[in-house]
Amino acid sequence: MKSAKLQAATLGGTPDDTEAAFYEALQNADIDQLMQCWAEEDEVVCVHPGGGRLIGPGAIRATFEAMFQSGGVRAFPERVHKVQSLASAVHHLIERVEISTPQGVQFAHLIATNVYHKTPQGWRMVAHHTSPGTAQDAKDVGAKPTVFH
Image 1: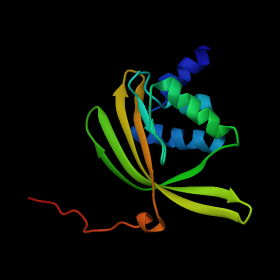
Image 2: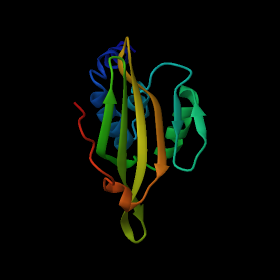
Image 3: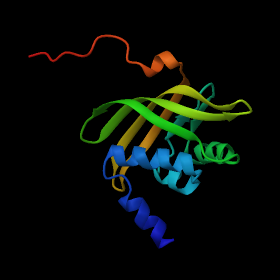
């Protein structure tokens, strides 16, 4: 059990590290690694595409365990836009998801927002929200932000 505590203490040197561990855990169907990415707070929240709001680590763990029954989730974060302050970070991204079908591998796009807080254990996820997307969502639309002086 000490090794799990040590791993939890070293995970998440940055929000990017925590995000990388989260997507690695999804692909490997590693529920323990995935849950180590989450803050140890009752108020953490997760919303899957078309699903309801899951509040708390127990509900989040249960839904990912059910997903992992058929193997990992091949989700690849792309086009990440970040806002970070001293103790919080918001990553808005497109997830490219591989789905195995009888016709072969198909791709889907999801729009995701991941929110991280800096905790005594390092950066941890406090919210993960995904919505259905389209191939068009994989492209940035609109003007690039300008810098005001």
